[in-house]
Length: 455
Image (cartoon, rainbow, N blue to C red; front, side):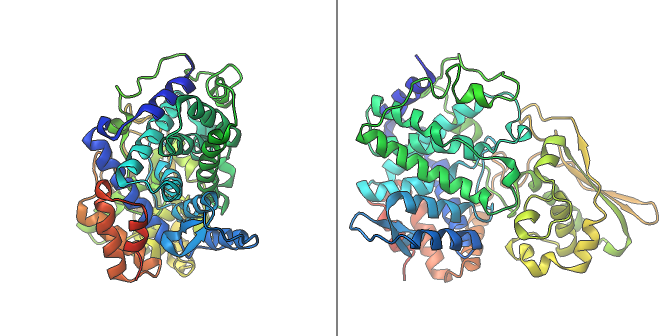
């Protein structure tokens, strides 16, 4: 049997009653964080451009669904595209196994759920189905796809979304297998587009494709069972050194990857690779006062793989700053915090911030955490002062918000309300939506999320 067959059998037979309790909680977290990021990303240029593009071909239909939490009505695939772009616009959404599963799957699920009037439990079931298939495929590649230039969210996101939507549309095993094989036709996206509008478009395209492929398979479209793990399939074609595991049997329903990897929620609105160094600097600043004018050099120590993810040494735009180790370390020092306001153009142009960024010298090491083979065993930052003295941050092994060091419920709510404020949502509206999504397993219809966010 192929991986596609095993995945299709799992997706088409999965029941909410099969799900471990932690998987339900993790899915609720994913919906919560994605909606927060979506609201904050609503005013972003990439969201407005995408919305303007969709407006060029207006065809109102009674089949349209809500997008942007009730602000728009669009055909389902377009709604998934727009919502996923907004959710990933600020790169503030959660991540796991080096991918952004929620900002792809949640928008696709919300769009499809409105067409079937799915309950909260059905949406949770669909999310877990997509997560398990996506994580299983990603885990079969032992080498670092980012270093080869691939963006895994763009490459595997269509497959994860197709699995989720196949479940929510109640496709049979044959249809689901075809949906997964067909989604490979949309696999693609490179690191070269990081720091531009195209990165959030990667998430939008993946969400749109997953929904489209499931619906095409439902209509009778077919695909090869070898598209994912065959000799000329996706895993073989992508693999940097040809070491992808294409032969092992999957243990869907026995080994729950969502329990192993969970979700990492970003405390700071910059790339996940930056979270540990920011924690370190802010922790040091709580302990002592640092005279920034006396700093000669700033030396962040991270893995070489992390360093390649944060390669903008002199970012000119907020989108570049999110992937800049120089910015992350310097902004934390300059402002004593790192939130959405610190990524505004005025903050990025701050003279002292620019001076600090010019003093950053990255120490990229070829040492890796045995449990997470992309980061180093720990990250730290050393400040070297003009008089030769030094101050070093703690060795940070797990960032705030990591699955091993999760945000508290209050911190999660604070992030949600901060995102809502950034997206110009009233506080009471944000509180209503936050409380509604916490009760996701008890929702009777997806429109409840749109109503919760309305005045």
